[in-house]
Structure formats: C-alpha cells, structure tokens
Image 1 (cartoon, rainbow, N blue to C red):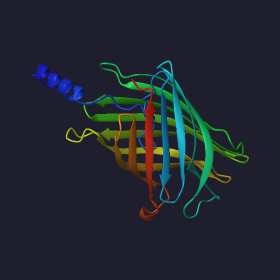
Image 2 (image 1 turned 90 degrees about the horizontal axis):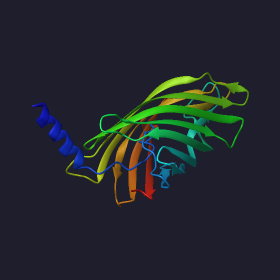
Image 3 (image 1 turned 120 degrees about the horizontal axis):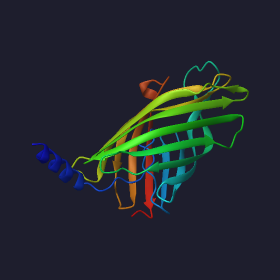
Image 4 (image 1 turned 180 degrees about the vertical axis):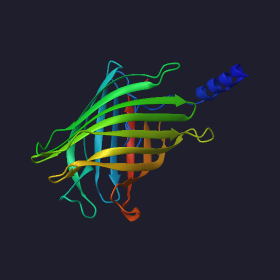
Length: 239
C-alpha cells in the first residue's frame, strides 16, 4: 500500500512543471532562487496608482541579489489614526539558499534593507522553506523585522510568514495563491510592524512570463480599504 501511495505522489509531481523561481507569493517570501545567471523581474500597479518593481539576479545557483522600489511600506503619525499613507522606498535583498531535494524542502535566508532615506529605514531578515508536491507549493518562514523613523527605532519583531500556491491539474497554467506576512510600519516616533493577508491568482501566459491579480488586506484597514493589484512577472535565462 505504501508503494502505491508513493507511486501516485511521484506521478502527480511529474505532471507539473518546476515552479517559476519567484521570490514571493504576494507578500510572503519563498525559498525559490533565480537560476545561475538568470533574471527574475516583477512590476506591480494597484487601483490607487501605487506600484513598484524588483529585479533579482541569480549567483551560482545558491545565492541571489535583488534591487527594487515600491510603495508597499506605509507611514503615519503616532498613534496611527485611519489608513496610513504609502511611503515610496528603494530596497535591496541578498539571499542564500539551497534548492529542494528528493525529501528536503528548499531553504533560503533573505536579508532586505531600504537604502534611500536614512531617517526612514526598514530591515527584514527572513528564513523561509518551500516545498513542492504535485501542484501544491507550501512556504513557511520566520522574519526578524526592525524599523526606524527619525530618532526612534523599534525593537526587533519576530513574526511568522506563510504561503500556499495551488495549481489545479485541470488548469496547469493557473495558480491560486494565498499568504500571510508582516511588513514594517514607519509610524512617526513609534515604528513597528503590521500584518498583511493576501490572495489571488497567477496565470502563466507565456513560458517566461506570468500575470497576477491579487488582493491585499492590512492591519488597521477595513474591508473597503483593501488593495487590488496587478503584477507582471518574467523569468529570463531559466533552465
């Protein structure tokens, strides 16, 4: 019986292509790294006109460097009243990791820091594992987050991250996504973190490119303040 179950798992897994090495679900990180010499790019735009981009370059199959800019971080007066305002930022990420093996999940350590405004700074160190079985990809991690606004620096917050991507066998180009993560909150005099919950769908329109439609819910936001966004992904130099 165990042999039959194992065979079914192997057949199911072989029916799906390797996941595109995108370093995020919606906000939660993944352990997928770009291929050696490959470039993974993303660009997003939401219904408020905010957006951003990021480009990651694979280094020797075990590391990657990423540069980007977006409006994902938010700022507000302390205490925050109402919806915090988006804060544009530039950021860099350095990642090291190992790919998924026959029995072990992929693992990556990701360090992200903003670098354009010394008085408004956010740092994130995340350890994340990812595992693919058939059309399902599971992601789980732990992030250490610290933010600074002016002379105020938050304590290091330890928070979990999680994500799930599911590709139904009858729709091999369509992936359902959901995740849970934390982002730095650049509140004046009282920086901290806020949770985000995201869900959406990714369509693999081309062998090298996909398009996502996603919804993001944040802490301190009502349902009507949720963000709807479109994101384009491209993987170049992929094996």
